[in-house]
Length: 391
Ligand SMILES: Cc1cc2nc3c(=O)[nH]c(=O)nc-3n(C[C@H](O)[C@H](O)[C@H](O)COP(=O)(O)OP(=O)(O)OC[C@H]3O[C@@H](n4cnc5c(N)ncnc54)[C@H](O)[C@@H]3O)c2cc1C
Image (cartoon, rainbow, N blue to C red; front, side, top):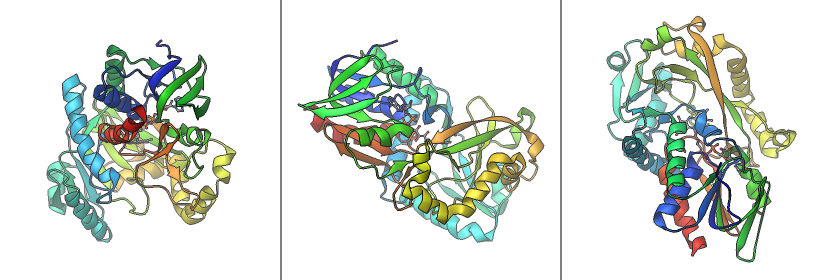
């Protein structure tokens, strides 16, 4: 296991895809930079990076001009390049966003408009009849086809990044969870199980722990991370051929979630999910004024999510809306991840990526999907903001 230095130029907290991409970006820009990645877990990618849909998003959904829109389109291109260069298994298998009936066509139009404005490559509208040319078992009133959407195991990408950093002399120190933070005298001090690391600058990419570390470094408590559990079911292998690539619903535009979808993964299995059920870390998350305000506004959606969580039948119904041949008996096993979603005191789920500053540090306060896809591009933006702190 790599040890953490007592003194260094740069400390990156969090060995998920984003922290590793930030460390790579800054050490490539500044040869000789003395950097370390400090990770709480016993392996990299143990957080969101290791339990997600594994989709390289093309950039369709996001508000034109937002960070998500810009960084997803750039990031997807770089993610494909990285996977090709490193020989990481991936597939540009494409995806459909399907309107079930006429009531969803207006929202599909809006997605199509956003996708074109965001310069998503190859985006194409399909009629009801054309859907089956892409997905023979799928039904709907119309769809968008995005041929540039793909799949990868983001944990494999994170492992390749960690290897590249180690090979270049940047230690990735595992089981080095940061317990306290203090800045002063031109240094930021981070305490962990092995003692203390003092850096000229730190970047925090700590997923579900990001708000607590930011507050420890002197940042405001707003927004707070309120995790959502995202559970998936696996399609039994004999039914997997019913889904060639990915089938997504038209999402509710007022929520930052893409809805329950059928996704092929590298290796061939197909999942259905994720659910999006509040998974508080503590009573404090539940008592956060934003959580209460969100609960009052979204209680109906919450009930649907509770039903998805506890009833395989209800979740499977979401698949049958698109692939009528699928029933609850076709699913077996699955996995779950926890989204680090920022929630404002006003009860609004923060939609875009958020990076904020404290003395001698930057904090990623909101990096939900598509942050894995966007990780190289988001890392560049973070590095631009971190560089003055390293001079
Ligand atoms: C269910 C689900 C589905 C998703 N689907 C997609 C998708 O298809 N495509 C996509 O692009 N994105 C997707 N995402 C989002 C994507 O997974 C995340 O945006 C991305 O992984 C964020 O990376 P990260 O490095 O910021 O966070 P993480 O991977 O969560 O890494 C944070 C790291 O910080 C460490 N840490 C925490 N506290 C401390 C501490 N005190 N000291 C040291 N280390 C600490 C954790 O152990 C962890 O390893 C999905 C997310 C979920 C949960």
